[in-house]
Amino acid sequence: MSVLRTRLASTSLSLAARRTLHTTAVRRDHFLDADAEAFKARVLDAKSDKPVLVDFYADWCQPCRVLSPLLKGVTGPESNFDLMTVNVDEHGDLAGQFKVTALPTVVAFKNGEVKNKFVGFRGQADIEKFLGML
Image (cartoon, rainbow, N blue to C red; front, side, top):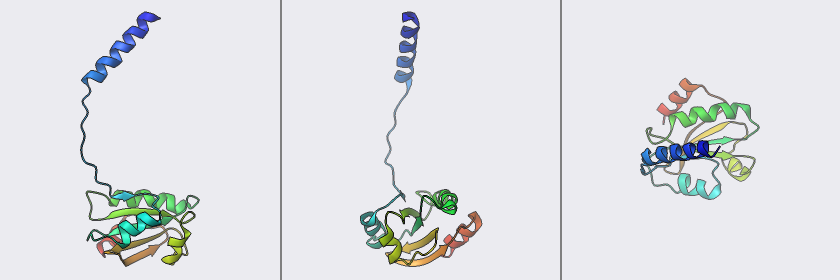
């Protein structure tokens, strides 16, 4: 047994020694499960021209679970859009402020102002069409 442990230890040590670590700056363009402070800072007070899609969702909402990954796929550093998700069960005040009455609701903000929104599930083509209108 000790021979096996020695071999395993030397193998993992040699693998670790060969592995190189790289560090790069990471740009956060997805703000998931945002609270009111993050919402205010990134959406309402933002001076950026990059629109932010705010996905109002709930954990129990099945269409929300399908829509969120689609939104993550079309937003981020390589796109012209950022994404923020807001759980309406935890932040009902934000949902009320923007008259969210059904889920999912996606509101597009630019320079702190509402530019467009949609309610309900949308497929990939409809999301891209929505983004093209911003």
